[in-house]
Length: 285
Length: 294
Image (cartoon, rainbow over all chains, first blue to last red; front, side, top):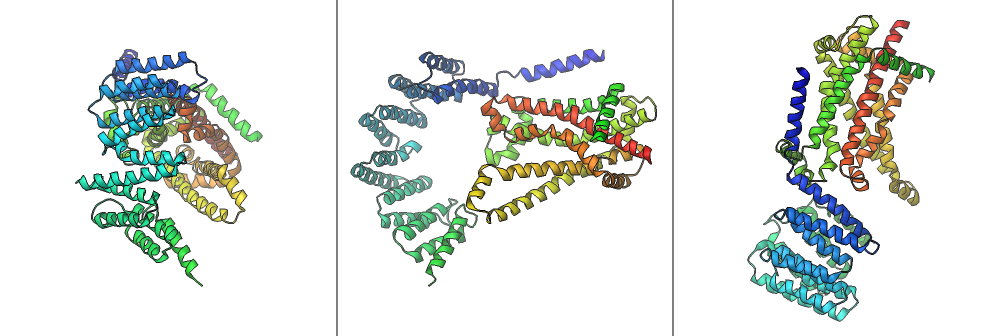
């Protein structure tokens, strides 16, 4: 009798635990296993046979069909595109991305990611003009998305990486103008904060120290002590400009003291203290 | 060393001749396995409803809800099990150790004592047993904390005076981490050894709590080398598990996520079916043989 009740209780526990077979956790587990297969291709894109690619793509497609409304289904669709891209099958990658763009035409974040990856495939083919067209599309159509905000800097950095200084300067100038225009149109304080940061960084790249400092100062006036946004990074950036570029040690010390006074627990606190000490040492005759 | 071998073989013989002696250890083992199973299923429905809020309360502010997702849940499993296992070791382990010692006392006095009657006796002394185990856990926790802090401060200070190349060598090869692990192992052995005779004294001599603890300390003082060796040797078996479970990320990437759970399970088997019975019974036998000598 005792044994029978034990068996019944154990069976009930097992049913209780296994009965929830289709929970999110199991879907994640299935997805993880497919991704593990995909990782083999990522790790050795040219050594893995084409059949292997089609097999893994098939697994991802099967997953998408099985769980069409799951968040991971979207991730799986991107994985297919990335797998084709890594195997240098750019046309197929773009086809996949196009299908994502058509499917998620109302989701800006997804769209910008898909367009950006499309640009990446052109870039990998050394077709910069086609890539640039995609990146500019993001700037034009989705300027305030995360990708849209970073795209002008991305373009400028491409020219920097390719050692094309004239184009790089023009791109940073265009970026600065773009951020300024967006900022003048925006009423969102958080967006303004991000835009000011990007604008200041564009000025730094252009070595327009006065403009960069004025933009950072504007951020300080607007946010320090008034909003919850921490200004320690801004103060550190200002210090570096004063100290390294303009050699204005007094101003640098002033901003460092401001940083330490307002943000004693900041990740820059230790560096700031060390910098202050060094500056004071150097001042001594 | 021959004394240790004799002690272990006497322990083995005792288990062989009185197989029911394994019952209290089996009980704790099954409870630990059940805990592992529950924690393994914790991120899944329906257990997620209970464990989800707990995990989010403790780890949510830093890691969000990552630990409720596959395979990240396996990064937390060793930590969760460590906490659960420690609580069980205090609450249930105190009782099962008491039961085992009562059974040994029965065997020694040539009386037949089964699991239930031994449990009745152990329950009557549960408060004392519980306090002894709590004392052990608290002492270990705080001394380890203090020594780790001291060792880190000292190493940070000493590193400044070492040549640059030697400093880089020490930092790159994780020598400080390994030294800390070794120090923690020694601390565990020493603290465990200090109180290992408290339960045998409590049961065999029917002493009060503080007298049992003091007697355990004085017995250890007289025979500290033997005690440290017979406690440390089985504990060495758990060291590989301890090291592996410090790096669940390594197990997940090198093998597969469930490998973390299998490692914990193997650790539970080794800990609760080999180390725990061997140390508990050896300590009781060693104490009994010494009492005989007196």
